[in-house]
Image (cartoon, rainbow, N blue to C red):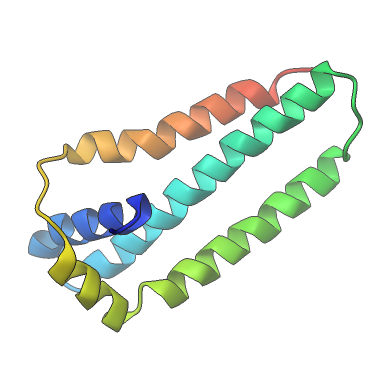
Length: 123
């Protein structure tokens, strides 16, 4: 069973393959990285807001953003290594065709970023 990022990667890849050819690989990789990073950002913002409301001093803002930057680099490297040609071909063969709206898939990470921005404003 493929995970959610795997199925979304293949769906985005197949959707943009018709119009963009080989550039669809980069578009799908960008989408998966953006999706995973937006989830991490939303969870981090929630935990930071929760800790500030509970008056728990975990880390400074600078350390928070540095840690988030390191996590982003890890996500990019992990996805770059994970979705090489062999893995993409295996996922493409095993995938089931879905009728998911492409707009809904792009709204998911944008919604997570919006939630994170709202939570980061909590004092």
